[in-house]
Image (cartoon, rainbow over all chains, first blue to last red):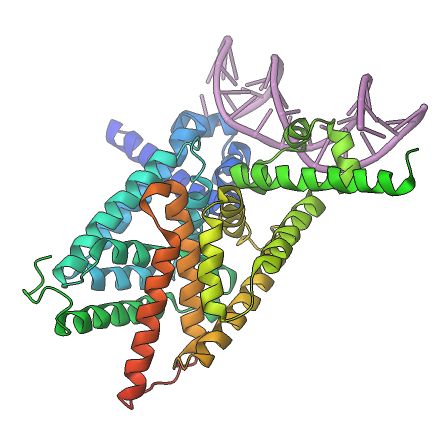
Length: 201
Length: 201
DNA sequence: CCTACCGATCGGTAGG
DNA sequence: CCTACCGATCGGTAGG
């Protein structure tokens, strides 16, 4: 009584398992350091069996990254983007493997010929655009540089948190940064050095 | 007339060449992705010849990192540590290979079994300590978290700069961050609501 | 989804 | 500082 639907469901579940294990392995040793044989063993199958599911190593990497961004996007609630970001950071502190994945791979992918280079270039462009819009809504006089600094802070905090998890409260640091950044923006506005037009900039 | 001194000088020069090429290669592909054969070819010698000079791959990596920090320390002038940092960032923008090296390796080395893990853990501890002292001297109410945020900003800006060099002015962003951070500290002081550092760091 | 295999490449050593 | 070599491991394919 094995229906076709069950077969597909089993295949999908197996693929999810593979993507989850790949998050861990790529996070531990990067794309170049990861071997398909090691990953296959962790998933309980042979390495040609693994390749049957994922195509090749590059496709696997891009599938892992895209899947992780999908899951993160689904988690983000409505409301202010800057507040949502602090919540996202708080949740990431319970997912060391995910933080490792993006920290290690974004650095590795700065090499122009890295298979995830275009992925990360597009991802940073999109993130900076979105946060710049949020800063503009909040009346920040330099929304785009402020967005770049915020993204930079996030990335840098992750490195220190991965090295000394107990010493770094990522969400608290992001919160403090946002507070001082927005307070400075307000001060500049009330000094008459900004555009006191209610934040249309 | 080849004196012993000349022989040693030649050996030292060869070693310097190897370390410089290793900066580039490790920066391009990381420690795990780098091969001694590729590095040897770039230096114009066989890979056993390379090993004669550097011992093994791990020793080479640690020598490269230590040498780079030595050179950076020698470049830093006297005076305020925070101003000196902005100058250092400005100079780094002319040394893409060095920025790549530290960005890629600090991420790779978050793995506890990485050969440079202890090096980076100690390096971050030292850097945060020094900058926290500078923030304390400047009267910042939360010097240690502020130092962590500053280091994080530096690291994160490097990633974005490596991806889009023309779009990111690292020194200017660090300058702006320091200005708002220190202005907020002054405001907190004159408000009489200076808050402690909350135990972070 | 497996076994068996391909050519390529790895870090390091032997021996001179 | 070289040639020659070691055992191990890599991503991917053949063929079923």
